[in-house]
Amino acid sequence: MVQPLNQLKESASQTAGPYVHIGLTPNFAEIGGVYPQDLGTSMVNDKTKGERITVVGRVLDGTGTPLKDALIEIWQADADGLYNSPSEMRGSADANFTGWGRCPTDMDTGEFRFETIKPGRVPFKDGRKQAPHITFWVVARGINIGLHTRMYFGDEEKANGEDPVLARVEHRVRVSTLIAPREGSTYRFDIHLQGEKETIFFDI
Amino acid sequence: MSDSQISNRKPETGAFFQRDREWHPQAYTPWYKTSVLRSPQKALLSLDNTLSEITGPVFGHNILGELDNDLITNFAKPGEMAIGPRIIVYGRVLDERGKGVPGALLEFWQANAGGRYRHRKEGYVAPLDPNFGGCGRTITDEEGNYSFRTIQPGPYPWPNGVNDWRPAHIHFSLFGHGFAQRLITQMYFEGDSLIWKCPIVKTINDRAAIEGLTAALDMNATIPMDSRAYKFDMVLRGRRSTLFENRMEGN
Image (cartoon, rainbow over all chains, first blue to last red; front, side, top):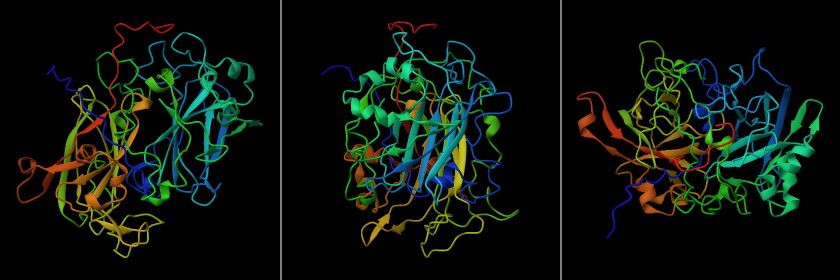
């Protein structure tokens, strides 16, 4: 026998189910008067530094049908590449930018939409710069454990070419699943759960 | 978000322990039919955490309203209360190292005592309770403790097999301190024989993992002549120590 490590196991994940809106966006679910507003609906204000952008997209199942009951959360750095988090030790992030957003997909169209800013570059562990990116977390009925992915920016070709995470992708044909094309100030990021265009999801 | 810092202790900056993907449910679990077309089929890309996952949003107590942790009254008309067996749910949020997680935002949602959700897409015949909304939230204290009051939700049938029933359960969403810790799970109730028949519960392979989601009746925490109590601890991913790791650039 050896000494026990006495470590605990993470609580097992369970699906968010079809009624995730009740808990996470009750006002969207027409449960008014409990919280003044749904958390994560607003990431920026008038004083937020950085280029204003819109990120829209859908989550598509294996038949290409958009999920109308999914919920997306995003997490990103501010315009200078700093996170609004106590674990951010490199400096103080823009106090007028939360860095975190939450949006249910529309019950009719399946579309999600975030009004945010373009993030700055954040260093990788070895000091190399990552390309600007937004971290995504997707939950829904039928998804047993939340899916992590990243959105990169279609107009950041040079930075994307140097990005140490994108460089890890063995099947180069899949890199494009993480890159959102730009039109005006809007980036479109469709997330494919399955199929030829299946988005790269991370075990991170 | 950051104006109410969680504590005076030094924030941790280590990467999180690798997730045990055999302990968690697999993505593709065909007996839970909706998973069939919603499960990624390619391997996940494994990556040690970067700053993007080591950091995460933290919420201050200033977001909380007085009744956020009381589902019996937070949607009820003045002077009225939700109908159903009154319970207190309490416990601790720990990490895999056994340390309490302070300042963790917990959001929870559930059906009413008849097993009916207040949701546009819900069609179960059981009636809505006009005094029950079904959502609540709280933030753990310095030791990771939390508690809230609610009514015990009812079991309900759902369209999967022709006669599948969900055991009574409360959904939980948890934020730790890093986005990699983000977790959604469900709490079940000790003694509910529907637990072991449920296709969603059975997406988890490991019996111990299911037992870890089953809250225990705690008679010592009940309020006599008022509410029973269930204890439900939850565990988030633990962090590596950074003591012997290279310092990140600019750190």
